[in-house]
Length: 312
Image 1 (cartoon, rainbow, N blue to C red):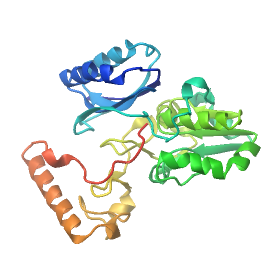
Image 2 (tube, rainbow, N blue to C red):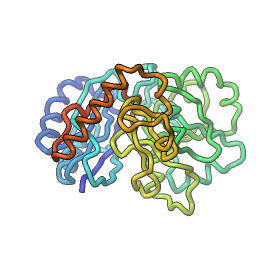
Image 3 (spheres, helix red, strand yellow):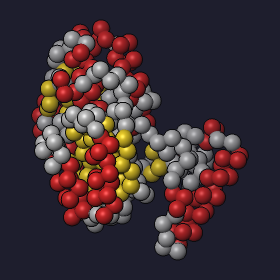
């Protein structure tokens, strides 16, 4: 069984490059795959590997200055959900494009999963899903506002356009996949002078892990940035697959569409790819299936289109 660990921590790293090499070497030695992002504002990522290996990497990160309080959300997978390992240096560990917004100087009020239902059911609470449009499409909390953003970079503009409405709400409750986007989203609202701002501690993943399905206000599945694609209550595997052309989630209904072709297209991207691109995807898919039949990893498993932005 593979352990999957999602983590983030805002902390001052004066020299992230000095942290990268030892962390990369440890991950490689422990058979870890996934992505870790390092910036002067902290660390963020999702990794997977043997339980002992994950424990070793988490212990290493917690030993870094200021990281003893690192929180980790874990799940299990039957197969490795990542193709490779990446430890990257970035300007931001979650890109909002507003470097002056600093979660270390002020964020919203944390709300535990156990208390979340009561908050969002209070009359007048404005519930905002801070994730991207393709994530919201496959699942969200009942009654939540969808900003319809393609990227988290678009979120500040949405806030600016709706500032009066947001400021007029008795309270604002925000949520995202693992909590990191809400650190910046709530810090943004605080900087705008809006104080009654709350966010789901640990994100949707923690909520689905801790809140029984019988008491849940979550509807649908939660998109995750790895080969599991989506998870449900108890972090059980979801029903969505991944389009290998555009990397968007595809539902059971999508896969039944005449516009869906495994490895080549889905209803979302069918009309946006030309014949040459589609032929390339088809050949890649054929090679992947041949490698799978031989019991080998497909070296070309890297997906061709842009990666969905801002994980966890």
